[in-house]
Image (tube, rainbow, N blue to C red; front, side, top):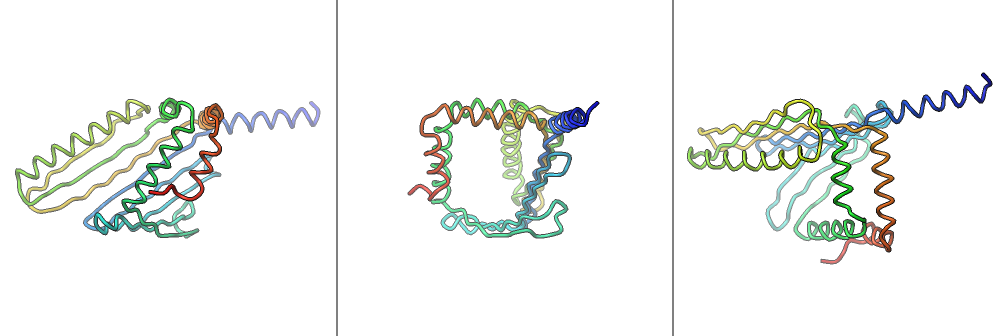
Length: 228
């Protein structure tokens, strides 16, 4: 075999290995008393591409001022800070985000169909969600525990209607009748094939091009926020 033949063979092998790889996602959130922790971790191409976002501080300042959170972009091991910043989310910003999301959906042809199709290619490999609730009053605690169970069940029913499930999720709502307390911990892991992720991205671009003025709409989204 000539050198260019070997080159094609090696290139084909690399392409097959790349397309057969997995894109992995991990989401973790916990709240204990007033301490919050949130991180999002993504890994692709056998770990060569990694991204991790840490949110170590989430402070609720009331209905008027909204929520302030600190975000940190760290390396894959989480031991070196790459960048950081502070964000505030209040009522006006929520309205702005909602308007941007509406423009984004309207500018993309059959956005909901694309989203559900992409979700169907995701496999949930792990889901642990434990919540402990206490209101200091037994009847109120029991009622609230039932409400939280209903909310969790509805959310998980929707989730597993659209994505694949691997293994059994561990879901708990634990009532604490002796004190006023609220703690929760959520850990979710999922993955999809790299070739399916690429195909979904290409399909998204094709759907976007079907709508006239899509790029102008996206420019509007990425530029200054819409006025409230």
